Amino acid sequence: MKFIKCCGKEDLNYTLASIFINDVNDYLIHNDYLNIGIATGNTFIDFMQYLNNCKKIPLNKINLFMVDEYVGVDPDDIRSCAIDLMNELKCINQFRNFYTFNKESYLSQIEDYNKILSDHPFDILLLGIGNDGHFGFNNYPETIKTTDSYKIIEFSEIERQQQVCLGWFEDINNVPKKGISITEYSVIKSSPKLKSLRISWNIFILCSRISFL
Image (cartoon, rainbow, N blue to C red; front, side, top):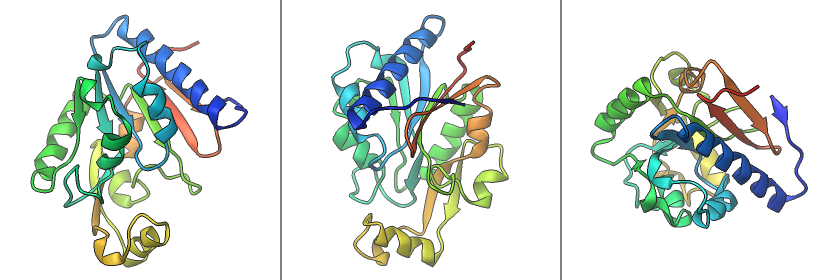
């Protein structure tokens, strides 16, 4: 792992954006498109502002996947993870595809996305790493004992209450009982040559399927 020390939030986001732009363009020299997974919530809000104003990468060659989502909500539901991306990433319609999950069709979507990522694993993953080492909702047995890229997990009552305490929901009745998360295997299978950059206490960028010295 390579560690990069940044002097404040502005420097951190500029550094992340520079790495991201370089890696995207390097990969597209020999490939037609990329599959990129991005964490939602507050993790990359500032970084998204760079993407909104960025003219240095062809967004129409990027398939954007969500790292996690709640089961039983549509993308425009105030409880969804997708709504953060849709509100903050003003250039969302410029991407080749933006893969979300819907209330009624999430099961077939999981199946479809797993097939896509089996044929072409993530090229770049933008992840927020929790204090306990988790990313997405992947700190569950369901996400460990699988060779799929996405898996459904079930929240305990304590975990649902914790999300209320963190301010994500007003009360526990609004917290979905299940979620969808990328798995450890989705990261591992992305490439045998994985570059990991730790650029702050809780933000990582994982770049895969690109060869580095």
